[in-house]
Length: 126
Image: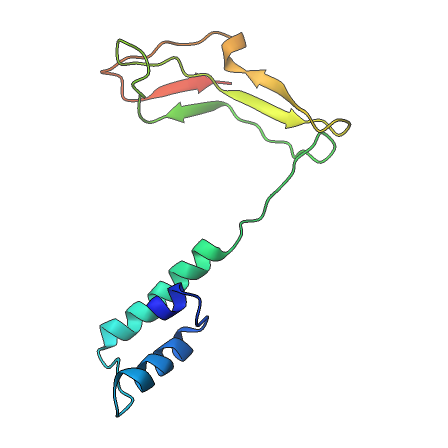
């Protein structure tokens, strides 16, 4: 696993083979199945961490139609002195012309609900 983490090997099988050759005279360095599985699992984790996620740029002309009715917060952040918060949701869209974001919806324009414990969830209606 450390050979892959260091970037010396990309393939788990090749890393295992190299380790086996260097670690022992009989070329059987990794023999326990759970250790061998770990090498392959670790490779999968590295692949996920190293792969770049696709970026999607949404502009006015390419924006899909999405209908949101509400957004639910399942925990109440402790931002205010009374242990609550005033959740605000803003939806922005980039302009095709100057690529600057503009607010197309803001829950603060329709009123903000102050939420405090013992409430466990809060719904922001859109």
